[in-house]
Length: 301
Image 1 (cartoon, rainbow, N blue to C red):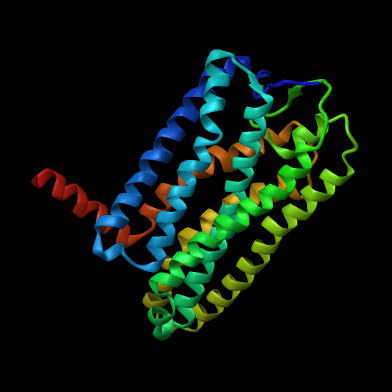
Image 2: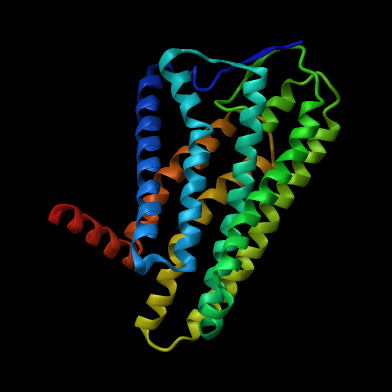
């Protein structure tokens, strides 16, 4: 039985290994630094202590954990040539990566619900979105995400791996591992489809419905300034959601295990986390004000 796997990653791009390493390292550094900055700003700036920014800071914590579950191993693979990963390490990464990914799907849904409530019920928003409900809505995606990950992990753990042991990916993910199994894959394939439907398609449908509701309300607002202000509160979330779900839908809803899957995975494991801190700061006037105030306070002190 196989005791370790070999992550092929981007071995076929030998001349680009160093460039990919630098890109992944810069992306990881910016993602962690940017999200820590967002967390700190939300904690210390009274202007940002609202439900929307509470969810954004929760999302920032999730993003740090998400990239830490994948990018350090990719960096090691690219720079040292150490492509092996033990069976236990591989399955640990599989469980954590999928749990965090599914948590992100539902946290993005919660954030869309928050924006819909703020725009369509502004008078009742503060009364409804009290601290207790915000905490409950922030915790629920973690419970649902890791519960869903436990189901597919349970089926995956029952598979036998008797060789070959080369994974055509830079992370231990469901489809690449299922391809290497020498057991009957019918149950795990069904589990992957059902989990992907529950964790990706279901949230996407609800998010689309919420944004149709939001856009319909915004179009009824009189005056260009009012419309712009309303749309600016949800445009950042809409961009992040589109980037994340766009790649995830292709990889998990129509799983092929092909060569392109690992390149698509770069979008939601490296590129999207790199862009998220910029999207939430550069497109948000409140965050920009908080950043300017924070920087000025540092220089004054």
